[in-house]
Length: 112
Image (cartoon, rainbow, N blue to C red; front, side, top):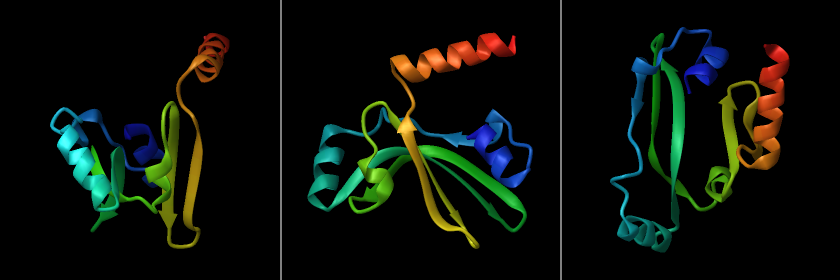
């Protein structure tokens, strides 16, 4: 979120600026009830600018089952972007596993 926030808003963000809440407090019961109500719990990073201040956070988030991020599973990651001119856009693909990891390692080796 630090990197994405900086790229999106050109505002310097450090890890200390990010409010982080993990999934340890999400219970099995939370997941079951959310599904009954038509929601999915996902660990979501959000960056927003309001009144010239940036708010960056990562936390378990209730998403309607119809939201595109609700269907991102397993090793896949997604970036969902909303812009006034562009509207809603989502970039989706593998973020872990054999292929993506090897590409990252080779890319780092080439950079070195």
